Amino acid sequence: MHLVLFDMDHTLIPADSGTLWAQFLYEQGRLSDEQMATREKFLHQYNAGTLKVEDAYSFDIGVLSSLGEDAPELLTEYFQHRVLPIISQAARDKVQFHLDAGHYVVMITATLEEMARPVAEFFGMHHLIGGKAKRDASGNYTGELEDLGPCMGRGKLVHLEDWLTTSGNNPSEYTFYSDSHNDLPLLEQVDTPIAVDPDDSLRAIAVENNWQIISFY
Image 1: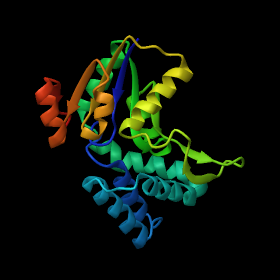
Image 2: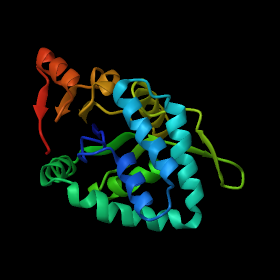
Image 3: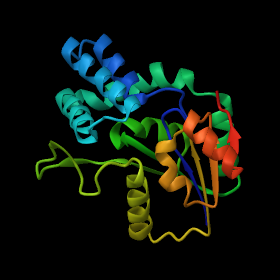
Image 4: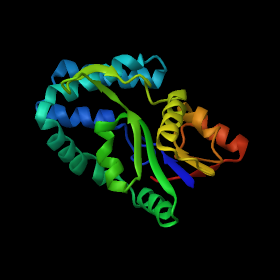
């Protein structure tokens, strides 16, 4: 099996999905001024490398929990109006190329799976690996992640290895598309790392290692 992995934010979509989601909810009156300011602070901290990941996940899980039964409908509306219009034909064509080739295509993202699922379904992904929000026995969010922790950086390797173990899949070849140097732990492990509209750090590493560099946007 040839396993093909795609990052989501700034790879398949040219934006930070958490920010798009927060802006959408704010305009819907479902997020306060204070909550919006907190979400924007997290983005600045992420870009500066100072983000406490657990705080960001706790915030996003809290927002999902506050939406209650309205969450699925709001997520669908958000995807249709904020995400779908900015997905490029190049991104669609690349995913479709791998699907047509019979490859097993997976989206792997730091974003909570609930928030990322509409994107994965649109692209026809075989599977989605993302942040997993913990629920209690009654099905309510606890505000924490499942035991695997954040699906980012080296955590993507942990989540991927867990899925491979539980699913019984044993790929003979791996390809990974990503924009970010934060994904280096996984990029360095695959057979074919591909930098997509890479940040400056990843671009330099890709050039040094003769990795393919492509653009979706």
